Image (tube, rainbow, N blue to C red; front, side, top):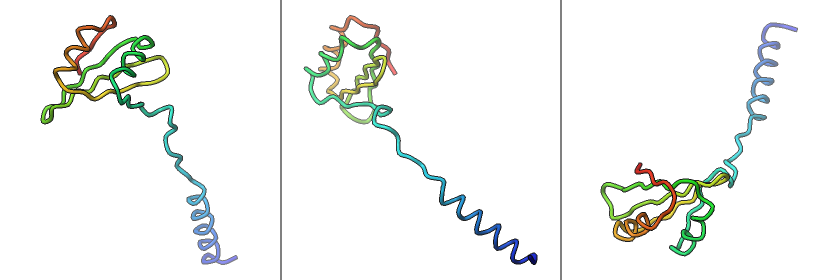
Length: 96
């Protein structure tokens, strides 16, 4: 086998190895779940251990994040409604 044949073989093997590398998308359980209503947020509150509050600077949106053992839940709301919800919480609240 000549040098050129060996180098071509190495290139072919290398290309096949690159084709075998497949990146899988994140599983759904790794992604946070967005809650659409205040009622859903309040029912999920019983399972949560902590609530994170993220106030976005340039918009009138506040993100409330509930951390449970298995998942992270998010809820977008107005600042006024967020303040009412945060005052009624019985779990630790952290500003992010």
